[in-house]
Amino acid sequence: MRKRVWIPLAVVAVAALGYFGIAPGYLESSMNRIDGKPLAPVSAEAIALHKTLQIVDLHSDTLMWDRDLLKPADRGHEDLPRLQAGNVALQLFSSVTKSPRGQNYDGNSGDTDNVTPLVIAQLQPPRTWTSLLQRSLYHGEKLDRAVGAAQGALGKVDSPASLDALIAARAAGKGQVGAMLTIEGLQNLEGRIENLDRLYAAGFRMAGLTHFFDNDVAGSMHGVKKGGLTPLGREVVAAMEDKGMIVDIAHCSQQCVSEILAMARRPVVSSHGGVQATCKVNRNLSDDQIRGVARTGGLIGIGYWDGAICETDPRAAARAMKHVRDLVGVQHVALGSDYDGATTVRFDTGQLVQVTQALLDEGFTPDEIRAVMGGNALRVIRAGLVPLAQVKPEQTGPQ
Image (cartoon, rainbow, N blue to C red; front, side):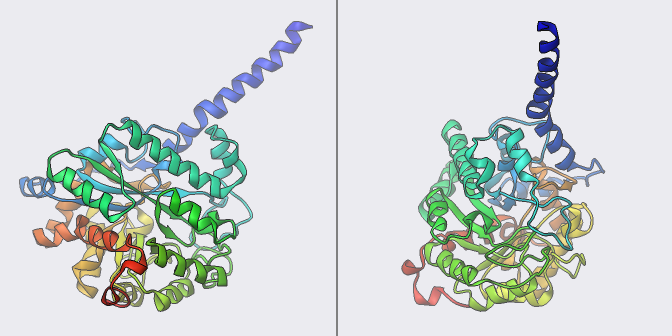
């Protein structure tokens, strides 16, 4: 009798070990890939220039996965050692809280969620199993723990002062990498504007209104109705600008983008994606949308995966950046990798010199490359972190 009881218990234990111990890592390895295709030779000029850059990446989803940010990983696209190897000055880490089953660029409802099984499999705190707000707050705590354990190698950026301290530390040769929290879809507000205060208190300083489905803030480019801002959404955008949280239009529907640009009092960013002119995917920005972002003084962050640039060659990313430069000026171009965002890329963050080389090959000057690789983002982020009440009137509105 005892043997008959222990056999099913052993089966359950083995199954649990597989689900909780193996499944999360296997899932990430299958979703965050490097395609292994040949990389371009890197010149001595590119290597030397790359070492002098202050590199900023506007979007990665690394916090969603169950691994130690401070240790080198054999999967995914980035961790602290690879950020250091790539000479990254500031990485913006996104909080992903919900993703529909069968996720696609054309149309998704919010009725299903792929993130919940992942959260449970990773044995995250039970409070995160049912609450999208708690998932984001957990991501903030996860980053705070990494910063605390990094012995100065990783620093949190949530104010102009902390950004200036990061740049000063790097100028002094300390090699610190900065980390700033962002949000991918404000469904984590759970319909309550006051939850924006909780997210701000946790250190979140940028937010995209939508992800792959329509929510109670705005319509998604990949949603069902693809509408514009809701009354709550208008309230949220205004509150974000007041607080010093940067508004991100990535994944927003066309109507959502248009309405945000019409009401924006501060620079708006598209944190990660591409442009229709070089890659006709619906999530990528039209020339009119690029001009609209530029009028706010904002940024277009270009990614490295096929949905953004229609391939994974770094020259394709550079061509998208060149289009933005030629259309509205180099001051509006930035990096938006979408690393660890269930994407397949050609190179990880430790190999970012590939982008420097690609920009040289596309005819960008060293000064333009400094702007694209991080100078533009540092300017917009530093200004965007200042609460609106502290901003001079000439620093608001179209720029």
